[in-house]
Image (cartoon, rainbow, N blue to C red; front, side):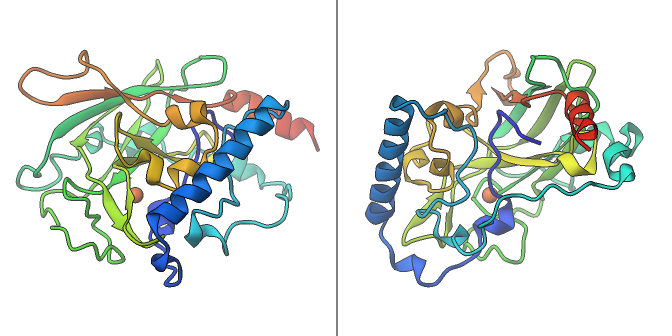
Length: 277
Ligand SMILES: [Fe+2]
């Protein structure tokens, strides 16, 4: 599924370690990012099409260099069952699974937030009945994951995973805790901006999209080779949520709005695919 909301890496990918890369300085990584972005902007001036997706081959993102695809994607016909069987039915997802603050006996530590928005197709039409899953670090920047060895506290009242089904207008809403930035091993003193991972399954197994939502004004944006692997400034901006006081609730939680725009309706995508073979 191609998306306007740009796909980026999953949790485990961003934690893959490359021992050689950790000796590189932030300045060296930042200089590479600056050069690649300047070349991209010049290419657009020269008539190239604006990019909407992260680059697969993006040198500053060192831990991705040896594992990204080096050949063009090869179209394979999925089995019919994959094209027409939704991953989950509405009855399988309980409304309370969208609240990440009530999964344990106590309240998680941190800033309670609501992240709400709509899933829309490329023509602005709502995508209803869409499974949306999220996962994230806690308020200290720590994941509940054995591969996360960041020496920040685990919160026994916060697992950091939730899911929801979009409503008739494509709407979703999660109540959670604002995640903190965390260090990773891409280079020396590398830190990820605070983010929430999103997965959308579409209507079919074959359409899954994974992306990340960021928070406005994060000082780590310019330093992060994952975020900056999206060379186009407008495409990067689409991954940043907006503070929305109408979502903020009195004496309870601050609110952020983030809409996810798919480039085309799922129906259109399936018809095109089936018409091709
Ligand atoms: Fe992450």
